[in-house]
Image (tube, rainbow, N blue to C red):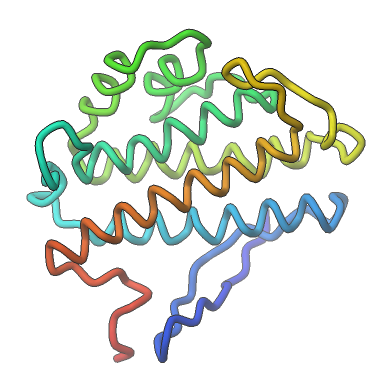
Length: 196
């Protein structure tokens, strides 16, 4: 898959984030979903790589996800959304996390335990990358005529289109959480660092 660099402007700072080029055979609407996701996912990965290993276990208070758990939750929840769009449990770094997140009927203690197992920065980034790589595949396989087809999502009937919107919204929510964690720890997100 070809890639290009998307330039993100934040104040006076420009950050080049590699983004996969959407397939030309998908509609502009699905390309928008894909590019929006990949822009957010690129920032999630950039921030995960910027957090020092000794800060990954930091959490703002007891009972709240730590840095590493937030990043792993980004990966796991992306796999969960993808499972509703037809993705199967992948082999590789995200396999064990996917077996928990992609099954129906999981319990929250099981999710928290699965997230807490990932403590190494490089492994967390691998899991995030593999889970984020699932999204272009499900978007390409989801035909436009199915976007308005309803599906059952945790007991609610929503369209496939709404699920894609929720996927982007959810990842953006946790990116904001991770940015707040970083700022509290005096870590400047890569795209906000002064231009050298």
